[in-house]
Image 1: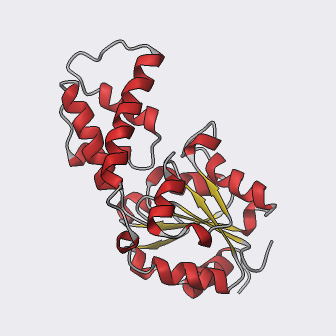
Image 2: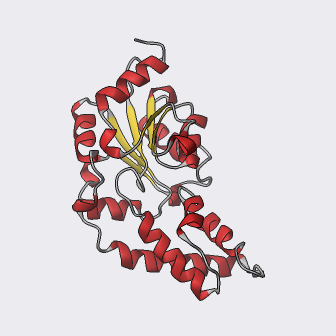
Length: 227
């Protein structure tokens, strides 16, 4: 086992910035066009889920779920993404969540590689808008993988690209599916959010302002039995 981690993989939505509201508004607009009503409570189950799976869950809410071809579903998902892209044009560095600038800087100073593991096909564009692209050694987005979270592929692809053993990696996630993906990859999982949903994380904080690199590294060593 590595004494210290060699790579930290960050989720995008809910960890680096919060685009969940923009996703919700875009999905809600599409749902209304289809005569389907969704609310914020329902939207919780879409977090960390890829675009096509999210669409399927929304279509299941219809009184009579439509029988759509794969091409028709892609058209709907693309339409939703268009609404989302219009909304995220407003994103700028002020939308970086509390504590993340400091954590990324400490991460880089510690000589630990930095990767992004996101379910969003717009991940690189959002990082550009946040002016954070230069901080990352590697970016994994949904366009590069076959299996979305909770499958571990998002995280293993990042580690493989940088030649780093999975046990030497940390994944930071705010979604149930994301934490599960990190765990299934054999990596150390850091959860951000409510213990009721993220109790399976190796280390849990309530919000991003509590993400302190020294504390994360200490918990990593404890978990690996290397105090």
